[in-house]
Length: 173
Image 1 (cartoon, rainbow, N blue to C red):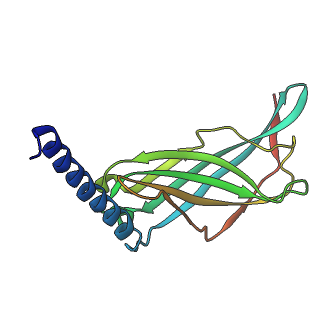
Image 2 (tube, one colour; image 1 turned 30 degrees about the vertical axis):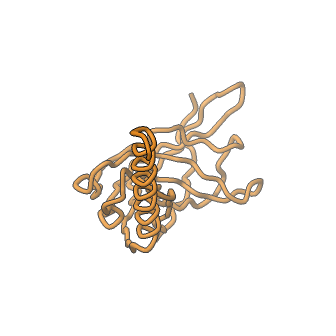
């Protein structure tokens, strides 16, 4: 006959098998849930300022933008949180793709997933790897990373509908 420890072990092993089977079903089923996030970044003001940085004259960009995004379709029963970022993407002669994160946020509930921010300034320094931006056009995209309770991390991008040119620098400090 089996003793108490063997019976407890058998029950625990069966419970863990059922539990991990359920987690696997949740992870696989959440891959088939479709979503359609929409959003727009509207740049209201873009200024370039010259600064003497590390004994070089360097251009810094300062942006004021409006962000309007509806990410509620990304939330389902397996969504823990979203990481959302506004990213400036542009191309220069020396680098094919330059990306700078201007603003970011963590969203933890469906109620907060509709972002409507007005007159937002860039949180991070917007400077090119070279000292000057030159005459480039930047696209401002909304990137999102979905962190589920169980399963794979998913990410996506809301494509911009317009690009903005960098103006000439304003002053020298």
